Length: 138
Image 1 (cartoon, rainbow, N blue to C red):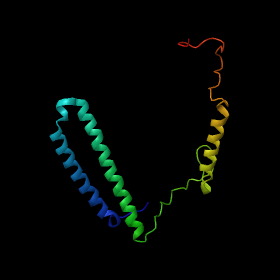
Image 2: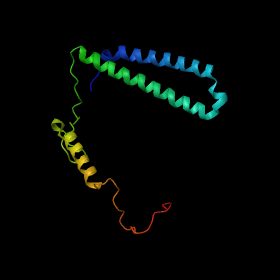
Image 3: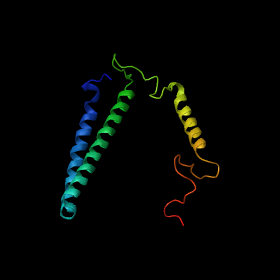
Image 4: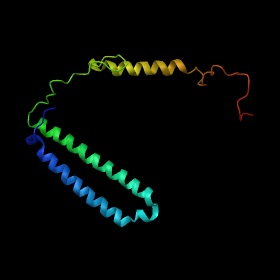
């Protein structure tokens, strides 16, 4: 997508401020909670993963907000010249008109109904003698 700084400077500033505020609040929380005393390195790792997750959420919200502003201004999203539309899924089904989703749902229903017997018991495993009692059964 072609995008200029003029189109995204505002949301970039909001995301940067969001990162700074969230980092400050998270740092205050970690210093107040004392998680390093109780959990040690594992607590620090969990804190780091949580911080990365929060930063990713802030960034993705900024991207969505930028798209909303871009479209609100009446601009049209134009892909690059070399971008190709996706017309076929990896399993060979078409993406036109939602047919792939309906087809996938019906094929999943066909698979689930064909593999389970009517009484709900699992089918016999090939290669195993069905006359012997399974381990742990009385």
